Length: 223
Image 1: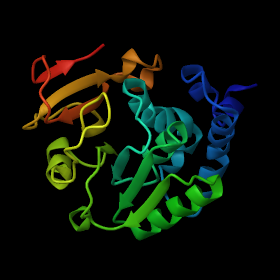
Image 2 (image 1 turned 60 degrees about the vertical axis):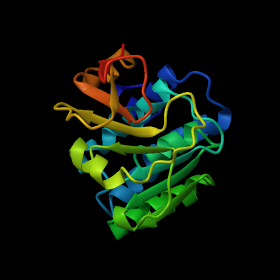
Image 3 (image 1 turned 90 degrees about the horizontal axis):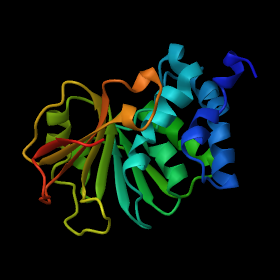
Image 4 (image 1 turned 90 degrees about the vertical axis):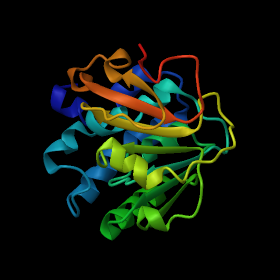
């Protein structure tokens, strides 16, 4: 397979996630064609980036699955989902987890809803709404480059459930590069190049911000 064709397959996902079911493999394999079709109509991701969908968007989103495995019926809010990241890849990995994908841009939400329907994912719901209008609480709130970390925290800080279901304390799981702003919470930083060898992941991190104390310093780098 030549390099150009390999960019359009999910092989890089399967290199890092080796225990997927046949259903999950089929779903990941379908993503490029579906996103390429929608991206021709609406700019869900950069037009120049569509050939790097699996590396820059799918695998990047799945860094969260390298840090934790969510238990069934965990409630996760993907705040500012944009083109459906990280929510859609995570929903494929965790079919028993409940995802709520939210964005204030109606045309993006319409496209994301259509993508979810095409894939047949039943563990996702979507809403076109501004964050302050959300009245629910969630076990985790995920995001990827929505805004700076402090502003993201201010938008979502009142939407975290106090009931703990998972090994990982309830909190924010945010994918970003430097700088990483401090928050009035405990914070763990996971360098993505400790999970993935590709140069794209250098200087990129998963931030876990939470209010449950741990026996470690307030900001730590985990390898």
